[in-house]
Length: 135
Image (tube, rainbow, N blue to C red):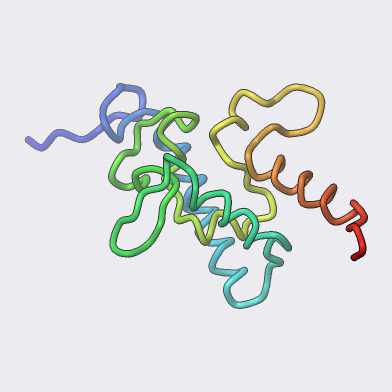
């Protein structure tokens, strides 16, 4: 008799939390494919977001592609604020609804988002408005 994973039992792929995480990842991947063919808009500052990710200690490279932590398929059970979310960085950075998981998980209060991406965007906005000295 074969043994199947039960979604109520805490096994590697058998918990509701992991099922939900994989389902959301599949939906994000589908949206990324639609962005790739121009049917959905990409984040206007995806390049700035990727620049932040390049310096991140959670960044991992698998198969020549950078990921936010270990890819989700290799480590489905994780704490996103310490392990990353497992998404490919180029797809995640282009998602207008995505946030960096490092601080965003704890930042569900009122006020500006404190994730590294949003902080970098606010800094870039201030730099763009700051007058440069003329020579």
